[in-house]
Image (cartoon, rainbow, N blue to C red; front, side, top):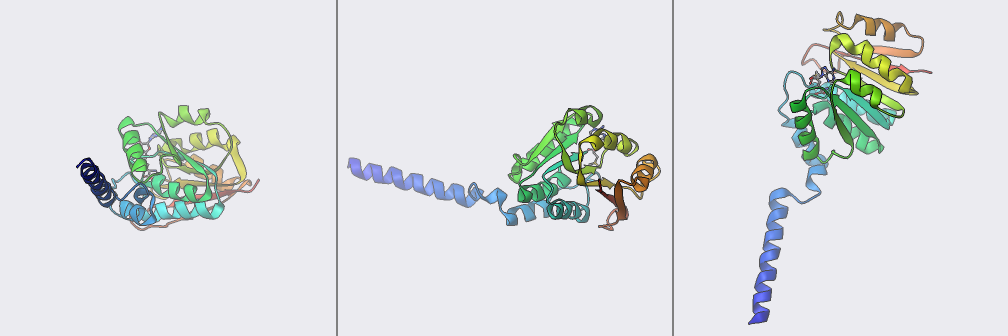
Length: 215
Ligand SMILES: C[S@@+](CC[C@H](N)C(=O)[O-])C[C@H]1O[C@@H](n2cnc3c(N)ncnc32)[C@H](O)[C@@H]1O
C-alpha cells in the first residue's frame, strides 16, 4: 500500500514537471533563437524604438566588429538593446544601456529578462550626462540615441574610453541633423574617424551615422 502511494506521488510529480516544460518551454526556451525571433517580431514598439531594420544593422555591426564592450545612450523599452544584446552574447561581450526614465528602465529590464539577456546587457538608470562618466574601462562600440542636441556631449564623455577600431553609431542623423549639427560636424571632419550615413530602414525615413575610429 505504502509503495503504491509512493508510485502515485512520483507519477504526479512527473506529470507536473512535463506540464511546466510544455507550458513554459523549459529553462532553455527563452534563450532559443526561435523564441527570440518571435519576441522581437511581436515586440510592442513605440515611436521611440529603433526600427527592426536599424536594430538588425546594429546587431550585424556588433557581430562583424567582434565588439566586446558597448554602450547604448537611450534605451527606451530595450528594442535596440535586445538586438545588440544578441550580438554581444555571440561575441562574448557586454552592453551597458543608459536610460533617464525609470519606467522605461523597468520595461527594458523586463524585456531583457524575458529573452534571457539580463546577464549580457546591464541597464543603468539616470541622466547619461551623469552616468556615462561613471562607466569604467574601454569601449569598442557605442550607439547614441538619446537627446539629439546632446549627442556631442555624450560622445565627448565617451571618446577618451574608445579603443582604436571602435564603431560609433548615432541615430536620427538625417531628420534631426540640425539639432546635432555640432556632433555631425565633429565626427565627419575628424581625421580620426571614417564616417558614412546610411539608411537601413525606410520606416522612419531617417538614418544613422556609422563611424570607425582609425586611431
Ligand atoms: C529614441 S529613444 C531610444 C530608443 C532605443 N535606443 C531603441 O533602440 O529602442 C530615446 C531615449 O533616450 C532617453 N533619454 C533622453 N535623454 C536622456 C538622458 N539625458 N540620459 C539617458 N536617457 C535619455 C529617453 O527617455 C528615451 O527613452
